[in-house]
Amino acid sequence: MPIIGLSTLSSHMNVDFSRFPLHTPVADIAVQGMQGIFSIIKELSRRDGLTLADVGRLYGEGMLVPQIVGTPAQVVEQLVELFRQRGEGAVAGAATGCCKRSSPFRELRATHQSEPGFFHK
Image (tube, rainbow, N blue to C red; front, side, top):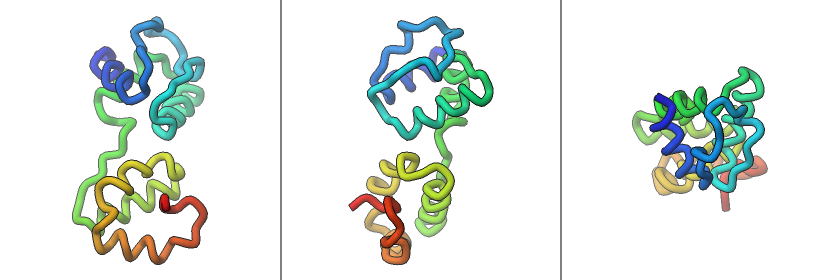
């Protein structure tokens, strides 16, 4: 059911998606919220012709949000790979919030600090 996913997405994007018909192409909607995730959603919508209902289903299933689990070192490795694939918007909150103080994260930060945008200052 797309409604649960759209409700969560509305909260994350700071937009009331109930104002739009469920068949609306997501690429036609502008949001104020998390731009990194929404840019991925818009890209998928353009590429695969997803509607708001489709995105609501996917978001509700957790398929549009990376599922990151493991030891601290594994989590950091996954964040680094996610950054390389999708850019800093995809990991900014996770990297600054969950593991900024972990030893593996500090080591990776030292290793990659010269890469533009790799870590927020």
